[in-house]
Picture 1 (cartoon, rainbow, N blue to C red):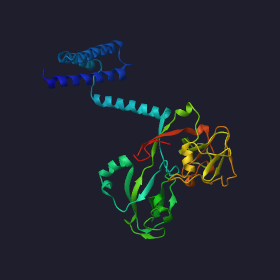
Picture 2 (cartoon, rainbow, N blue to C red):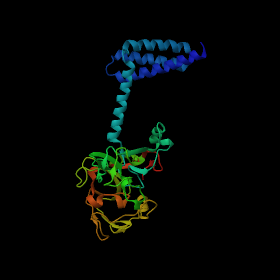
Picture 3 (cartoon, rainbow, N blue to C red):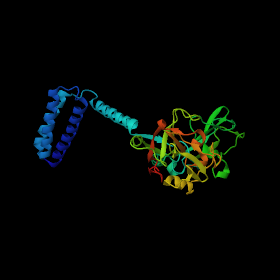
Picture 4 (cartoon, one colour):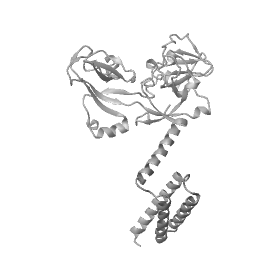
Length: 365
């Protein structure tokens, strides 16, 4: 027997062994005990033949197992499709189980945690570059989450004043002749903050097809949340906490927020800019809290906002209450405004930034 044929015989044997294992795993509950035992026996014989290295014995055992599979579990029409469907169903079930009990993906919608984690943000770009052209832009998006986009007027008329989107905090909505235009929020901030303004101002006349904005929109960081660890230990100060908003006044209901855990049950929380103060002690640890107070590059310290408008004010936390604040303290609506997070609302700490690839990719802290 030639070397090529021996190789083909071994390959066919391995594929048949895999198929036999799949049949036994997926149909064990409907097979007769004698059928299941027959498959197991013939599968063992083929495995032994492959291990022996004898091509003739392997070929013979392959034929025997193949005949048994055809008789006990005939493929019929669409057999391959059915097998693939079964694999997909199992994979989906495993993924749903992991999401429900172990890990949960979460995307950062806003900039309240910058520069630790980025939400959806945009940067002006006058025209597409090489990597912004199809099909290279697909690869660029898959790696970096960046997508070049243009917003053009859908009608001729007067550019209206912007309104906030009820579903997406990263955009503002402008109306022209009754048609809505979604513009990235970064692009309509004031010039003094170093960001790009819209090419037209509210009240200007525009023609259909006029370019309102062009640039690169970057998707927010996507993280995995560890839903297990807080079942075995208490939450710790400095962890990035994900929680649901149910029954928290002044917050949209049925969604999730992500902030930094700053205050623990039974503590008194105050702010002496740029420091976080707990029980009248300035916090210089853990490191995530310290780097915000030090005003490391990108951080601006803890700010007096919301209901904490003076260093003399303190927020007392009762049992089972946690104080949440964004790392971007001057641009974060958090517990300073709407109060503490009940323990029943906690989901878990952010563990890993898994997409897109950036300097923030990896462990989340």
